[in-house]
Figure 1 (tube, rainbow, N blue to C red):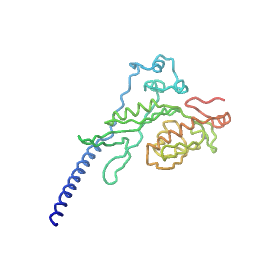
Figure 2: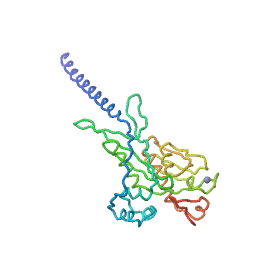
Figure 3: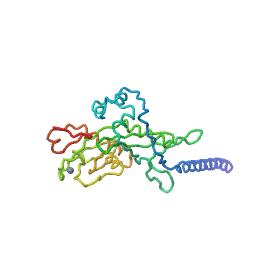
Figure 4: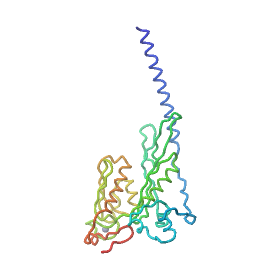
Amino acid sequence: MVKTEETLEEPKKLNEEVVEEEKLEVEKDIIEVAGVEEETLPIPETDLGKWNPKTTLGKKVKSGEITNIDQILDKGEKILEKEIVEILLPKLENELLMVGQSKGKFGGGARRVFKQTQKKTPEGNKPSFACFAVVGDKDGYIGGGYGKSKDTVPAREKAIRKAKLNVFKIRRGCGSWQCGCKTPHSIPFQAVGKCGSVEIKLMPAPKGKGLCIEKECAKILRLAGIKDVWSKTKGQTKVKQNLIMACFNALKKIMQMKVNKELIESVGLVEGRKKLEI
Ligand SMILES: [Zn+2]
């Protein structure tokens, strides 16, 4: 009986050792990959003179038939070439949001631009990078996109390209009862956006209040051209991607709301760049 017990125990120990070795290997890999710093290479600017449009919309933009992005957005047409947006909104700025988390021991978890994941394959660990980009001209136009790739640079380029294709306009105004200045420094009325368990409520604030909101959402609103806002969140706001999407949904909801003359007059509603007329 004693002999059999020993023989039974031995293979178990061996297995444990093997597992530990594997773990060590995995940790080494992670450290190696985490050593890759966020690359700050400048984004190559596309030469708009050499651009050859493929879609009818692109051809119209190049020939000068369409000169305002509202002509496209009001019809609800789909933009398939990022150059269209680059020509019509030349002041566009982009920013990457911190959706990722750094890996490492002792808690780790500092927010990073790139969300890094790994897939286990027979050949080894295959890392993959993803990031979320926001573009905006600080004057009523904004877009967001998510890009994923094997490396950081193509992931960033994909995200920025998608963000440009998803451009939409927002409504601004002064909906604050304390202010009533009728200039587009805040939002015209409060709105709630949802994504997953996350719920975010944006509320108009008086002039000079600043963006009283979570950091990543503040980046979005700054690029949109909103300067003062109050907010309240609910749910798992640690899930940054959902929080960001909820913020976008709230801005889209403001756009969808039906407005009457009285509201337009009292708030000084601005759609995109254009002031709404009664
Ligand atoms: Zn105001």
